[in-house]
Length: 69
Image 1 (cartoon, one colour):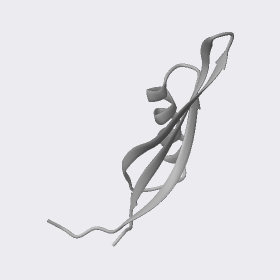
Image 2 (cartoon, rainbow, N blue to C red; image 1 turned 180 degrees about the vertical axis):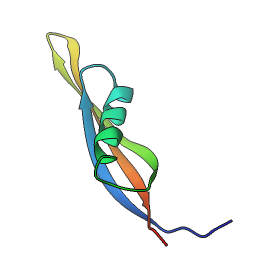
Image 3 (spheres, helix red, strand yellow; image 1 turned 90 degrees about the vertical axis):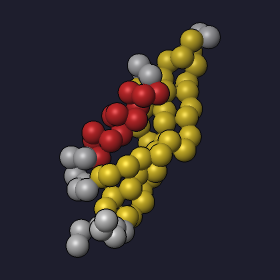
């Protein structure tokens, strides 16, 4: 097994659909400009309520980027 080193960054994605979709939005957007995204960890989930219903999800994730050899 190779030894790897990772850099961690924090991202926050949002979605009116679901918390899972908010994670997907954050990772897909980040992958357009960042290389070697290997893992994520959900650290916080929030929501916005309007008229007693969930209007928006906001999810913060830690993301691991593998440092190139």
